[in-house]
Length: 441
Image 1 (cartoon, one colour):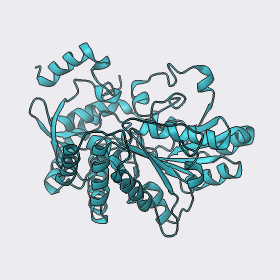
Image 2 (spheres, rainbow, N blue to C red):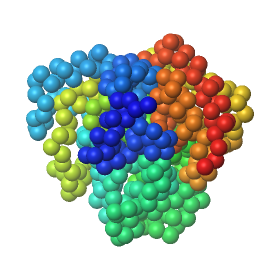
Image 3 (cartoon, one colour):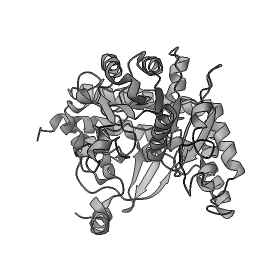
């Protein structure tokens, strides 16, 4: 029976490519019509048909505090009353930049000395790469298969998330000479890192890596991997770009880098990229790092970057308020909620006899239909991903909205209270049985 979501999807496909403005939203890997959301509050979202779900997508990460947090909404409303955009500097931009720099600090380690605000994670990583090339005078970039750093040219080769879900050519539309500037190697394989540097070391500008991979499912770096990347890159005069667009300020007050620092894994990236939480759900991202590298950006240096809406006052207000409200108590609550759901997910699948693992990085986790948690893109894509659509739709039917792809992380928020968590836990056994009954296509 058709409902409002089906009707909207039909209308959308007539005017929007694929009916969506970001590919994973199309439900391509799980089937059916996507839920067109009308509102969100706390731990819940409500679709256009009036159905409410416990939400484990959290706008793909930004809603750390929960949807429509009154403090964040109030800050945006106040900012909007003073003007939507100025195209000029504001005092609030300074405040947010300083707040970002102050948070990325553990003990004496404070690697973010300058910050540039931009509008999207793609723009942040694109700018960081251009900056690394301009600073070093080198052209080549090293990235890891399955890591997603936005959709700019040269970065989609073997990318995860949407590309993996849709099984699209990684570099469609990218001219061969541009793609050739990116060297793609396997994640968590330091031998390959050393090999690529032994061959191309004097031509490599930077290595870019997700602080913890979360776009091919959650795949944490092996112990010492990120630190070794820094050592190898620096030994060859290259930079390390740590992509914290997804993990930054979500898994720890100082991002995944901070989590690793506190665990005793000490290393210093040259550049960071931030998104999602840093904008509090509004379009905002940032890059930051060493002063000498960052000062190579225009207008102080020769590397050009600009944006009419960079530092948009509404987005800056949302970011400042979110970061201020993201207290240690918030992180403790999110961690506890993630542990509760991850444990229940494991138990449900175990009881249903489904081969699985529940990979985790901080409060980020997901499901992999494989006996061992994947450590690379090849291992992530070798799982029995065909079990996920049945699992997903069983959860949706029970009022729980999961990411519509097995290659995405699950996100909890500080608003997931006992009632919301109870609904998730109650839905898991039937969903696990649905996954067990699924048949390979």
